[in-house]
Amino acid sequence: MPPGEGEVLRLPAPLPLDCGRTLESVDVAYETYGTLNEDRSNAVLLCHPLTADQFAGRDHPVTGKPGWWSYLIGPGLPLDTDRVFVVCANVLGGCMGSTGPASLDPETGRPYGLGFPVVTISDMVRAQAALLDALGIGRLLAVVGGSMGGMQALAWAADFPERVRNAAILASAARHTPQNIAFHEVGRQAVMADPAWRGGDYAGEEPPKAGLAVARMAAHVTYLSEAALEEKFGRRFQDRASLGYGFDADFQVESYLRHQGSSFTDRFDANSYLYITRAMDYFDLGSGEALSERFSGTKTRFLLASFTSDWLYPTPESRRVVRALHGAGAAVSFVELRNDRGHDAFLIPDPAFEAVLEGFLGTAMREAGV
Image 1 (cartoon, helix red, strand yellow):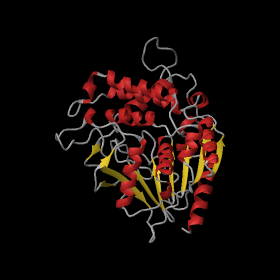
Image 2 (image 1 turned 180 degrees about the horizontal axis):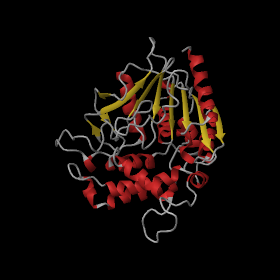
Image 3 (image 1 turned 90 degrees about the vertical axis):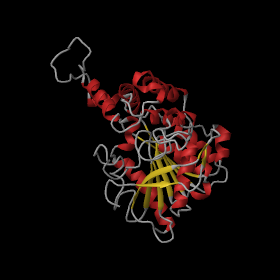
Image 4 (image 1 turned 135 degrees about the vertical axis):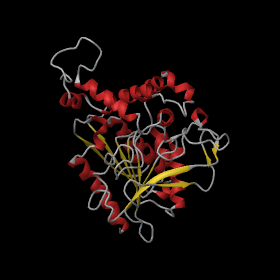
């Protein structure tokens, strides 16, 4: 497959959703890395976080930037493409080729907009399962994901335990806290307050870029840590020697956030942002004994990793999952990695993190004989 090009599969059957509706026609856009072996035992499903997509290991076709996990995917890397076949699919509700609110509704011939059904993390996983069925992949060597991707990995292990040998859940949680929901609601309200949103019916018009940019700015603050912001920006001025006594970007951190917001609108659909954040808010595998029961009898081997500076999905959230897995008798490893990069730490090269992931996946490969 040439760099920058992906595949789109139309699922062979309608997809029932948790909300009670059924999508009659579903496209799943995906990228693959490596080669599927003869007995199809070396497949790894990589689940992407909220604002990423299927372009994990190749340059992004819109931005031209390297894939969001390109430093981990390739020959000799933790996701060693000389040994494993990596599949990464754009989630249901996304905006990079998979069916979502910007897709055409076959009943009207117009984009769904808010007519698109509300989807859940489990709906996303069922669409991925149907994709793997079509690719002839029955059982996964591993499912790997960080943040929202970690939620998908957990849902895979809970909903399809017989199909998952190993699961790596990174900087994630088994449910959204009220604080998580609150931050997402701020972003959604920013989008919906933009007059260009037009009640979600902005197809063919100028999209609500201002609202989406503000949503991205607010969310991006939660991905960083105070130490990272201090080290990167401090109170340094942006292109000036003193205060401007106005509302331009006096500080470097302001300029940085504005850039993050504006560049995001070039590659992401505002309605998709509403739907995907809602799916994350609805995610709740349970707590305590109920969470243990979701994994009762599982044969999946788990890795959970958290980061000391991640205040969006802090270490106690990972420990809660670990306790539940221990209660279910699961084989589980846990590590808390010390760094000051915040929630985004799993997206940034770090030797300690890479060693943990390489060790976990290396053991999985050896045990499977790949």
